[in-house]
Image 1 (cartoon, one colour):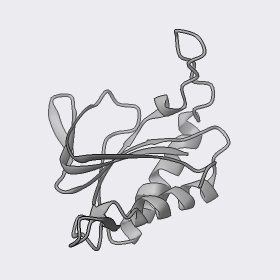
Image 2 (image 1 turned 90 degrees about the horizontal axis):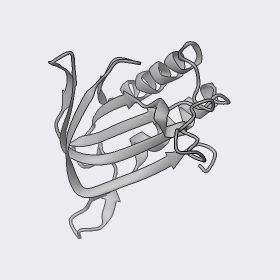
Image 3 (image 1 turned 120 degrees about the horizontal axis):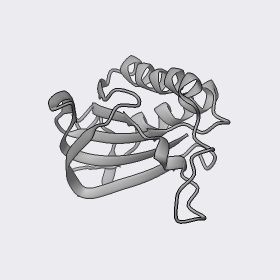
Image 4 (image 1 turned 30 degrees about the vertical axis):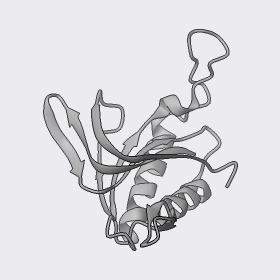
Length: 148
């Protein structure tokens, strides 16, 4: 799995002209599922997202996780394009999991984050979405379960 995690002041997702999900301070997470991913990868990435210490402490050091910073809000958006093969000018997406595999894993990450006490908002898997965010810092981290 791959996740692009951005620390935000706020974020929202709009579908068909209506706000579907929105958060205050926390993380905007773009989440992609690889064809080889399974439950172990979902657990690993959920744990890493929830524990990322990228909020500043009283000394201005990135040392606090979202719960410690009072920012336990997540907006998690499915993003199959994170597994684009860009060797040619037209990206290929054969390494991105098909919906029948990806949806349960995406939902598992969401459930695991909620189980850790996070408020989680989402888009709709496969929908055309407009995502807005006010980045904080900016701080953006790329996670890949093959490297964790």
